[in-house]
Length: 475
Ligand code: ME8
Image 1 (cartoon, rainbow, N blue to C red):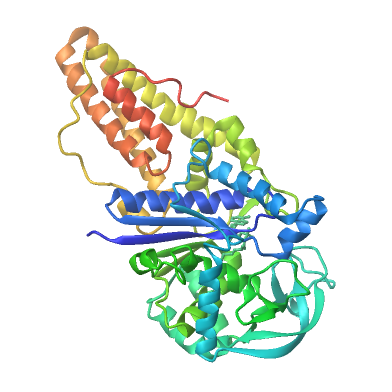
Image 2 (image 1 turned 135 degrees about the vertical axis):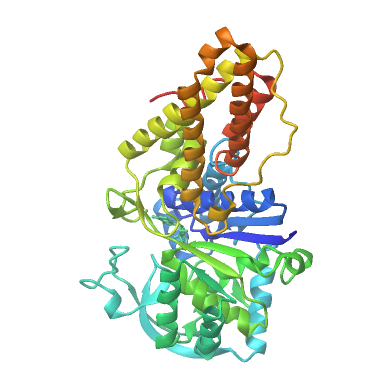
């Protein structure tokens, strides 16, 4: 059935170059967007960066640069990583929240809606603020006086700002999640947010005094305050579609089918965001897919901890397609997954160099020997055989299924030895080899979601009936 499908990633903090965690979210979002396009949906795929934050301003100061210039450099490195020559992320829009024309009108329009609903009120606040999290924290979140995730003591804040009446929406959000109008995937994450909602959501501070923060969107009608960065950031999902300015895309694509996020930002997306939308009288997103964390050598990979694997290092050595493959196949979308350089190399050699690369070379070698013209591919092919997995977001299982189809072809070659049959019975060899070529073409079509360039090269080689360049040289 024809559908419109709006898919988003979080907007990433450009306070440093992108790391493998960002690459992971963008890659699985891209695979799901390609899948929806392949089944005929009209897709709008959004990604971008979260710029109006103290983290970024601080990083710019540390680099001795002006914030705008610093942002342009880091944002280019995100765009470069997502470009066709690297991860090939097929987004329709890359939003920057510093963009006063694209993003700010939507953020301010939504703010006004919350005010109209009577859900914004001034109050004084005293508490602890962790810049790493860009969120208020409590004593019980700390270990030895420091935030354990960022290894830094929080700031002590005492100020007057605006609050959002989130507590009012606790019941309604819980109801919508329980009846799956807003689906949280997987179940474990749904239970986590339900437990939080059962304890009740508290009102949240939604602005900061302008003189205390160096960046931020001005609160409408009060120049002494700037929006709290999460209030600003969450709005990107609708401002990108033109909410608050030209809302044609908004009317077409909202509500989102799928927000893809990491588990660290679940409460913002399944608590604050639905609260804001309910307050504004807007429909809630349909699904939130919450993935785990990539660890390296068993530890969370984070800019602050310094154990980051730079995706560019892997791409330079193995290519963007291999990185996409590893992330989709070897990191479960629902749990934490570990990566080390050794494991990456082993996988590359086993699955891609010896596996896919070798199979393609063998089949096309035989086909170019046996046929003068390319094999006829016009007959109707089987529908997408991995839909059952992808619909459930089991990208790893989809790839396991494809590799098991490939081993069927390898077994077939092993048993029937078409390369020998050619010498004695050309007709029989042609039947065997055309079966192999057609199956390989079908596999290449499915691989388009995971490794678009490789898929294209395999299909072209089949259509030209010639052995392709070595797709995955052994390392
Ligand atoms: O939280 N493993 O931005 P952020 C897997 N700007 N994924 C990871 C990861 C890891 N080790 N580290 C990060 C923010 N991610 C806010 C979001 S949205 C309105 C605002 C991925 O740069 C994962 O998707 O810290 C996580 O949720 C996101 O990057 C956080 O990126």
